[in-house]
Amino acid sequence: MHETIDEQESNRFFSPDNIQAAHTIQATFTNEQFRIRSVSDHNGQIWPSGDIYLNKGDHQTFVITPKESFQIDRLSVNFQNKNIQNNTVDRLSIDEQQR
Image (cartoon, rainbow, N blue to C red; front, side, top):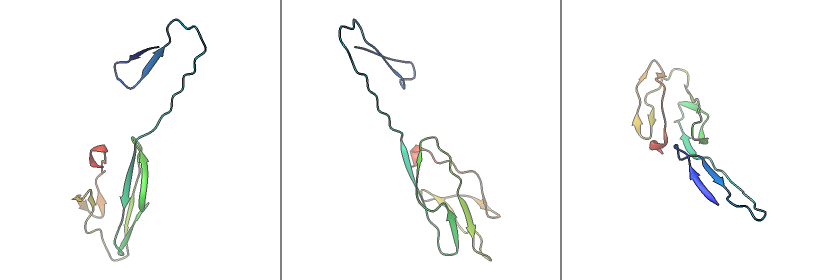
């Protein structure tokens, strides 16, 4: 069998040469998954909370809600604080470099 790889190196093409007998071609696939762990203290909540597993390229919205008379004091992603104004956080980007 002859294997060629396209320019993106993400697709592989198999071209059997001079077939003289039956063959079976089988492929299995997996998707890269990332664990996002969200936790809050007892003065508010994050939803969804706990361990969430997302596939590479997925999008997930997290709702962060302080209890009445509280406001968000600090939000961190991978132990890096994020800018918060009026309980609003700019869109966060979490990519595979931040595992």
